[in-house]
Length: 89
Image (tube, rainbow, N blue to C red; front, side, top):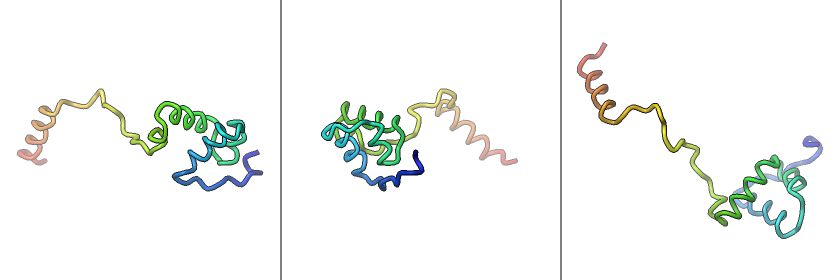
């Protein structure tokens, strides 16, 4: 049970240590995830990122979307802002 286990504090080196516990020590994803207080899905994501990109795959990433499909073009945005400045309320 999650409440029965005191999770280790997660530091910057935490994901790497957890990954090495799975790869080098041969422990299961489930038991390492329980030890570290993360879900199995997170462990699998860390493993996939590490296998794909090495240590760089474990660095923090932006959560900002790559694009916004409903964002107006920059030229229209400039025109709207100019109109708002020239005609305040």
